[in-house]
Length: 196
Image 1 (cartoon, rainbow, N blue to C red):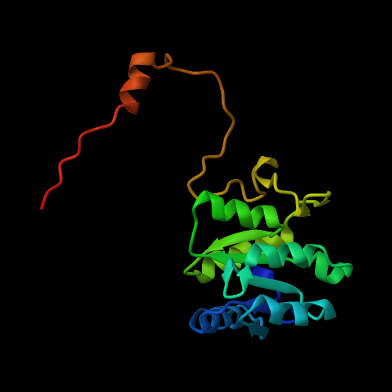
Image 2: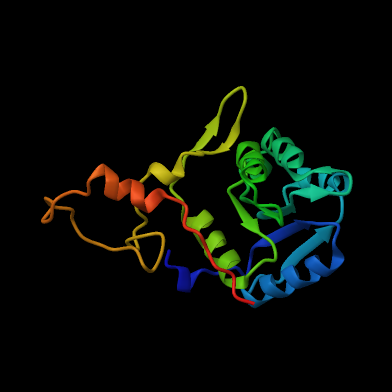
């Protein structure tokens, strides 16, 4: 499915975030995508009451909630017996993008981690990517969720991960390789002047 033909009109989303302002913005973004059926709750416990019914197609969860970690909620979702709940796409939002926070989300079984503040373009791209992702679902004793090794599956069909990616085949070098001294010269810290 092409990204410009994605139809969100029948998708029911559950948003879990204790920041009401962030929820309002997220609901407006989702409505702009044509996804009118978003319900929000502000705690892990409220989400756990709603999720087992299997009424939702998408879970959007803040990483740090007032009564627990989003990663713990995702592990709970991935442990549910109902396939509709267990395999639902999960997007984790976080303002903390240090490697440890991103790895925690990834290792809990989320489909994708998105940095806050949320950009409509980035969120749309991640939702489309999650919906079209060919990653298999992995179930082991220590992990349940999409295969975490997606970045080794090669380039996406569009030809690259960024607009600036070069496309083409690599050939033999046409110039001599850099010497070790030249490489070391690139690595030396440069002294910067600060102008006031």
